[in-house]
Image (cartoon, rainbow, N blue to C red; front, side):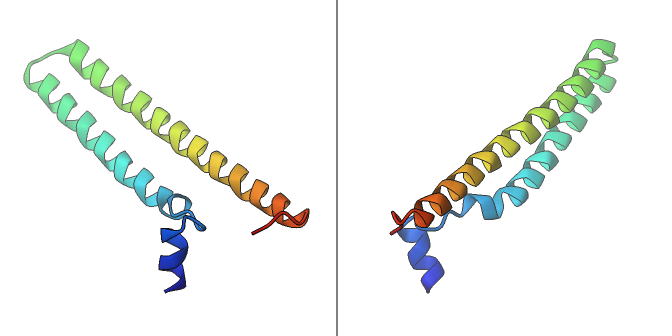
Length: 92
């Protein structure tokens, strides 16, 4: 019950807990999209499409990883600031 109340009052943030699941779900989507692009390019005998599918899949995975890491860093900054605020006596 306390977890629900913390979530409703935004005292506890849920995204840092679930970001790993979100990341792996998005990785699966990027890989599936790349495989479909690759298969479509192979069926059309398009060398440029094959290379493009591989490159876009790799870039997609790298950008996904960077965005998830930036999100986690922002939440770590928030947690450290909350900790500092409690140390100096300004806590809730």
